[in-house]
Every structure is written in C-alpha cells, then in structure tokens.
Image (cartoon, rainbow, N blue to C red):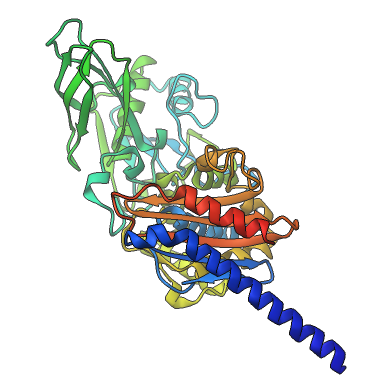
Length: 477
C-alpha cells in the first residue's frame, strides 16, 4: 500500500475513533441523571456493515421486555418461508364425528394455533360465526356433543418467569392452539342509579361465562373513582372492588383468559343455539392426541389472513399472546409445538445470525418472562444479519414507525426521527428497550439497540432521554 494512502487511512481511522469517543461521552452525559438514580443502560449503534458508531456496555445483559419479539418474528421469517399468502395451515376447523352404528353424531372443534380468530358483530374475516353457519347449513339434525380438541400444542399455558399478577390482564392472556379475540374479554363498569348503589357490570358476549362478584359502590361526583379487578388463575370468578362516581363514564377493563379453548367452545355453543342447532350432551375438552380425526375431512375450515399481517400485530402493537402462539407454531416445525421446541428454533436462528451466545437467554416468545436477557450486541447482530436476508425489508415493515403507528405512534412526535426510525419497543416494570433501524442525517441507515434497566420508581420516564440520545447520534452521522 502506498505510504500516502496508508497515512490517509490511518488519519481517517483516528478521526472516526475520536468522533465515536466524543459521541459516547455525550451519551454518558445525557444518561448521567438516570445513572445517578441507580439505572443501568447499554447502547450499540452500528452501520449495516457492522461498523460501530456508539458502543456503551454493549455486552451487558439486560431484561429486554418486548424486544424479545424481534427474535421470535425473525425466526418465523427465517423458517416459515414467504408469509404473504393466506395462512392455510393454522385456521380453526369443525368436523362431524359419526356416532356408533349410525347414532347421533357429534361435532369436533379443532384449533391449529391461529391467534386471530374473532367473534364480534363486526367480524368479516376468520370469524367463529362462519363455523356455526356451516353447521347450521349442513342440517345435521340433533347432535350429541361438542368436542373441543386443544391438543395441537402441549398444554403449556404460560412460559417460565411470568409474574402471577399479570395473568389476569389482557397482556398476560394464555396462548393455546385455539385462541379467540386476543384471548381477552371486556368488563364494562358504569355507576349505579343512586348514591350507594352497586355499580352496573357487564361482560357483553361473555356474560354467563364468568361469575361476577360486584363490590363497586357508586359515590358522589366530588370524589375520585378507583376500581380494582381480580381473577385468580384457573378461577371462573371475577371480583370487582372499589368506587365509581355518579358522573363517571363507562369504564372498560380488558381481562385475560387462561383457558381460551374452553371459552371459544362456549362461544360456539352460544352461536349454535342462536341458529337452533341442538346439542344434547354439552361440551367436552380434549388435550392430547385425538386419533378419531386422522385423515378426516372437515365440514368447514377457516383460512386466516397472511401470517405477515400477524407479525405486524406482534411487532407494531406488541401483542403478547400472538407472539406466544407464534412461538408454539415454530415448535411444530419438526417438533411437538411445545414452548421448549419453539425456543430451540429461536436460539438456532440467533446462532445463525452470529449473535454472541453470552448475549441472550430467551424463555418466551413475547418478552414477559423475567428470565429473558439480551445484550445490545446480540440484538444488533440480529438486525444486521436480517437486513441481508431476502425477507429483511418485509420484516422491518412490521416494526412500529416513530410518530406514526403502533407503540411508537405517540413518541418522537415532531422529532427529526419521526417517520425515520423503525423499531420494537419494550416495557416492563423498571425496564425499557428500543431496538431497530434509524436513518441518520446523512441518509445512511443505522442499526441500534438501547436498553435501560433498574430504573427507580421515583425516576421520571426515560423515554425522553432515549429519544434525545438517538436524535443526537442520528444528527452527528
């Protein structure tokens, strides 16, 4: 190499190193207030060629929250092929099971892992009512039993490390092979007619599935409403306690299901009753192998929309149950459909992506487990590798866009990065994460991963600080 060119390259490297060091000092200064309150953080920003621009604690391991969804959805893109065709493998189906010696037949409802089955008056596609309509149109006469097969995945209701207090919330809903309405129901609470009267409670279409214990009292408008909802795991009792003012508008509380297959079957029964289909012996739930369905042809089967649309729900809206259902579907690839089989596929993908093994421990598909850990370096390795895959652009399109949609709709508003940062958010108690791609001032696309953990409860939200740091890095590049 000519001596002049060698000197130019050396000076260029020194300049880049100095610029990086300056930027890292600026980041550290911005983050000082959070560090002073006990928070820890890690940040890695690189070019799409892997050249480091800012690197602060890149190998430290953090509770990543929903940034885990990046690994789950990237594995689906990597292993499940093009995802833009109708999702024909996953739709729920209804079978007619002949009775012995031409006796009364039974129905069998089967789930195959789709997370998007709906049961609502405005449902147009992938609706439970379509299966009820098919049964009614078949004129089967009296039926003996509605049998529900929920054995496509092993009965792993929740992954390891989920907090018990989250399990009755919509974001903590269980996943199974038969899911409906995001596996959540809505409890509506309105004030009673007079002071001191019990509040009015309604579960809408779910009325009658849960028993309600109403301990909410109507109080004068000069006070404040305060309502608490609790359902113990495995219980069919909902307890509502607290106070609601006379002038309060209706309050809507989303409650997670812990046996979605049972609830789906209960709703199908209601739909069949409305269509005058008589079932004499009620319902039974089957988990495990169901050999009577081997080679059987369904009376009707739903075809969900393309799976890429569900990946957008998972990444843009951070839908936990959908991510957990997807993890189990990954586990069905040469496996049983268990959580462990799904995690094996995710971890194998991380190896392929070149993520350092010490940089990840993954225990679920959504990021709710407190046992998950990711390092910024592991996430950026995934982002850089994925960008080179033929599906990389389609995957990035499932990310939330700063200032525009998903969990970033109300962040980066008016920022130079609005519309130019595509990322996955993450939030758990005391933990925040943001990882994805952003466009620098030069027009170059950068990959980044940013985690803040152990934030004190007295601390202000770190979101504004994270935004400022990323804006400064984008502006300097």
